[in-house]
Image (cartoon, rainbow, N blue to C red; front, side):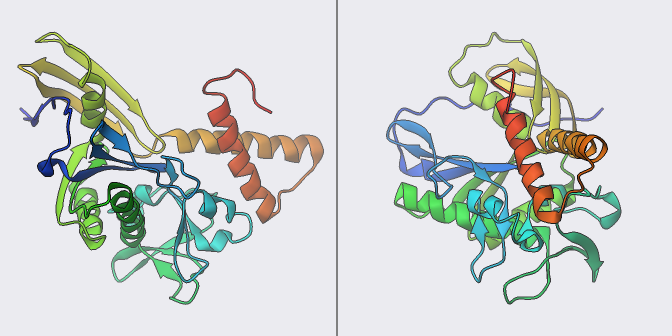
Length: 293
């Protein structure tokens, strides 16, 4: 019988304590976010330069210093060969395990046993690994979190998909340490979702819960039992190749087909990436509304 780890549901903290100088990071396929403890409780960090809490997981290498978030997204039309995204779907995987997305502006290949992304960098070679991309993202998030918190943050909790392999977990930990963090803890994404839900809600003992977590790039389904304020996982499964990014692809292929068959329009490269971004916006618009222009 497969034994799963137990997780104690955390209690709400009402004041900042020295031992809570830690940052929690969701290193997402499509977006990243981070949270720290403040005097008024847990607070998310403004990561993007626009002040938004959610940071698109896009990195641009067309300048000497890497560029992140919405600024990198906006450069996709003009500098596609220098932009990387979806690196979470590549990190810690063998080349044969990776499903190639035809809309990726980069190619992937293998070099000395490592999977690399072939991109156009400012002045530092033409390849990069998903681990290096994660390191750059985490360095940026660490810098923003420390600037927001006004203190060094050495301890970090990183959420990872339930279906992540040991290789993917190990590579994520390695990237986190390369980013400058000392003490690294990994937390399964469905458990993190459960913590966030239960922290201000009462749930009876012996209750059984089904958690369905559809993210930007991964799907987690988890069944667990609550016993003595602990989460005891009964069943845990997921798909690290299914998420909101795939809905973007469905929309893109639909509109590309419409443009081709109805209007005889063939997309140039810059128009292709504009359509991809427009499809992402349509998907987000259709979450709270019934129509999108």
